[in-house]
Amino acid sequence: MLPLRQGGLVTAVADGREPVWLIGPEHQLAATFYRNSAVHFLLDTALCELAVLRARDDSADPVGAFWAEIAWLRDLLKFEFYFREREEYRRQVQAEMERHDPAWEERLRSGPDAADALLAQLRPLVSQVIVRPFVEAYRLVADVLATEDVTADVDTRADDAEVTRRALGLGHQYVAQRRLRSSESVSVLLFQTALQLARNRGLFDPGEDLAKRRAAFLTELRNLLRRIDRIEDLAIRRYNRDAGARPAGP
Image 1 (spheres, rainbow, N blue to C red):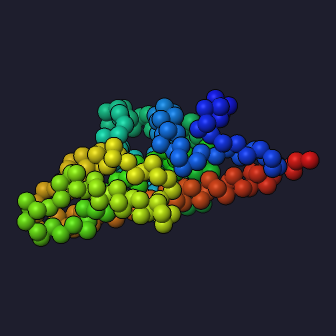
Image 2: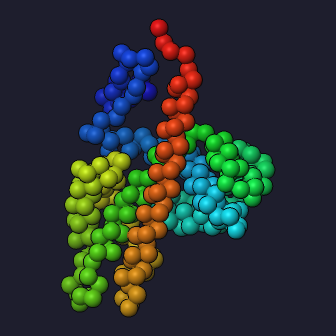
Image 3: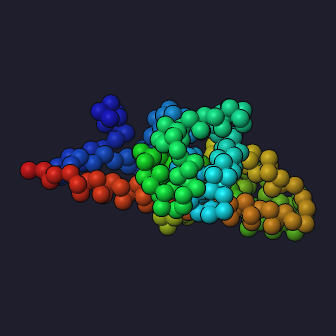
């Protein structure tokens, strides 16, 4: 942390009961470089958190829901990260979960309370840091696509440059309204990946159901962001509880 502070990236507030480290808005893009250096080491943990939360809400087949969420997240982020082949990656995720609890599948099948206890074992909670910027950027592009008039002539529809321009404007609006956690989600580079994903999902292919397909993709991303919000709320409550348990300073 000291080198980051010396470089001006991180600011320390140290005159209270405990030090607080801050990254100002003007340094968030630079901080992305350091975050991306560590993100690969935490990606599996982040996806497991979200998959456990998704399994918690599926009473019929929670373990199946867990693996379905892992597969969906892997497909969602495949243009951002290198993932091993499907079965090999499944074994990698299995090992990550067993690191926290060898009986994790039985815990998921035991109901929401057991799933909550399993989620509490995952430390630290990181999906709100690792996954959110990408999902927020994808959501901005999906929002632009979902509100486009798909009944217009194909030649008059927005091209990549225009979608990016509109997503930037919407992102700046959302940052001003505090509807985004970080301005780093408002990124041309992330929008380019989002457009690549949208094409891969057929969201530029003509058809009578194009508007429906685009709206469904936007809904998927909004639901994922809600799950990320739940993880973040849990992380904040955990931090406040742990901080309250520590003895007060002099």
